[in-house]
Length: 205
Image (cartoon, rainbow, N blue to C red):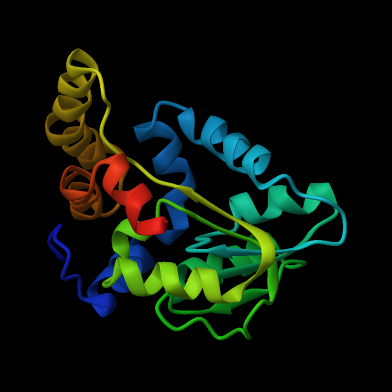
């Protein structure tokens, strides 16, 4: 199992997501206590989508978010480096183009997209700064980048509860509801190792 540090092996991370692809959305809904729908709505609102725009959804997984983006009349390309996720996504959303892509070397030209978004995937890339540079490269001038990611609560009491859930409750729950509990232990560890909001904001610029 890949460990939660900044030197992630892409092949191991991809294999981990391949293993959980079939029940990924259901498991996440359970472990996040139904909050995933709220987070997806927040991303859609932040993207400010308009008909005719083109959106790149990176680390799109099974395409649940990408499918919702199309309701605005925007075009969407769903990209992921997990072939297992892409296979499930294509079966569920055949009208959406799914592309096998590495966030560190996106197979798209400069200034190709009006909007670029990544949800809960930036933690899993081997080089965060290179990925951010790629995101900037493929966005059109005046476009938007929207990143949705786990972080650390700023209020101390909430931070304590949050950390205890991540490191104690989430692994126990994942043993019961996931086909690959190790993947969710990795999730908890990677969130704990992730930079605080201010550091990530500085990286994005």
